[in-house]
Length: 549
Image 1: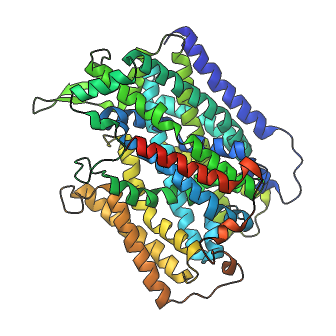
Image 2: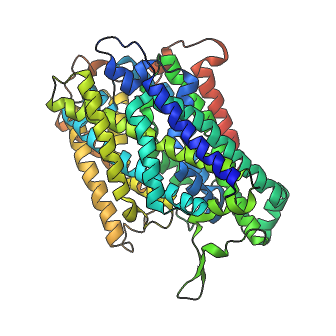
């Protein structure tokens, strides 16, 4: 990197830390008893543009920039399904989940589960949510960021991770959700700008769409442009696995994961929450073109001899060349981007890394304070809850750094993170879906489904790692998620008849009487109406899938 590039990166990093601290420390009149709401939920004052940008920023991290480019290089546009399918899930969040979350005035999703089911469900989801936030949202992001920063700056991975962790944790722990959302909104714009820069550079370098298709056709790999693979796809992700397996992962991630949904819980009102979710759904169209496609274009450039990947290639014991594609995105930055723009790309990577970590830390603080600490210290005041939340966020940072050597064993970062989600999500997706759509879903059935479903997922995960060639090990993770989900649904339905439901005053109003009931709310008039935007997003995604089928 040139001095200019380095200066841009450092100034951006310091600027974000300053904005985060300034936002968090800015004097604001907080009514008595509202200090914790202001810290954890930004005083429930967030409007739809900020919610949409923050949702996207919390989702898209340095991990996605690195891993989606890696998957684009390896398998083409296929992994883009994880981005486009999210748009359908965000429609579900907007239409069916948001109304209950906002009307019940919950601070956390475990709190919602207690209102719908019982305290045991709340405790279990709180623990699972904290663990998943540490592993999935923070540790994996650190790993991806460490790999990139080591290549760009020549700094030891652990050194760079610790520095990023310290400063990101500083403004997140001090400033709360308001600081997180403000910085995430800025970081989303920078991240998108950086991704667009490298996409345009790669597109011009490769010579346009015609060159991409002709090169892939000449190598017999034109199917890399297809989003939907046939039933006999050797990669384990045929079209039916995507449409059956992704909703299980997506509903947990976008509708039932505290780290993501906390931005919605901080909404000013129901309409802002709904539109913010849909706004994010529209933004999720972009990653296929600015995150995945550049990786595929890098592959085309390598085939044409215009992109040197020799530094990430080794010779296997069988004499075949092995490419460690984890570092493809970094090579794209250093080889293809003109000097002066490298700093912008580095700033984009820092944006993705810092936004993911800050969002997860704030959610961990909220979960630990409201769902665990307050359970044992019900007399705890607002200031005490905030202090405990800050301590828990700091501990989570340290724990996530300790997980890096273990997670680095995955060959593909994207496959690694989704492999873990596939075994965590099914029971949680089950109890949320049945909870809001089926009035007979009982508290005991949800409690045992969470316990037994999580145990089943853990056993299957361990068996996969110890005996990868077993019958279970041969099942692709997307289909495994679907099979586990079906098992959990069957389990909860049976248990709901064994332990019949006895609704409380709160649970009696936390399920839809009919599928059309969520659409009864009028919403804003004109183009900002949530019904119109939901239909528009659905049509846009259908057309895109038809084009790239």
